[in-house]
Length: 265
Image (cartoon, rainbow, N blue to C red):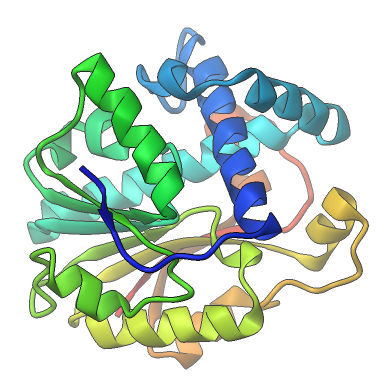
């Protein structure tokens, strides 16, 4: 059952929901490969004709797009696994989680508490599908909320999150959909919630990526995520461009600046 908190809707929210469909379609394609970077047996549950059509359009514009999505997921998976097993982390928070299925597809998370926070309609649909499939995980707390409108500390505490314990926060495909004010507010809240030794996994696109994707001249915020994170007291564990990660994982690369970052408080 999704626990719902005050929410709002709009064109940006619909764009985020469409992105969740595209990512599911990409994970399904990857999972059919002989040696996938990311194997997601649940992606098939969330693939829509809309997601497949949008993925096809994206791939015509950027042939590397799916590889970037999978390289990002692989980077996050590896750092999350290392962090959880090394430091015995028992609580993970995924913000704007969409149709991501880490809680089920990664074995090391099955006995850990996972908090998934996203718009109520997104999580209602997700949990309905998982329940019908008989795959609704008992270790996941689903919190339907607009992160721009709620106090994260309050809603997490009400659902059993222990701020004194180390945790991992995942912000995958999220911050470039937020306004500068919303990004600052989000990181202020996260900084207050996290205990020392906790980590954040986050990605960010560059100005050239925004211009290619939408033709907009608007710059993403923050323009330099590494400087932004260190200025807020985080230490960078690893920062890499997704083009370099695809070269690491597949031998192929592209030049667009799209960061994947693991950092520690």
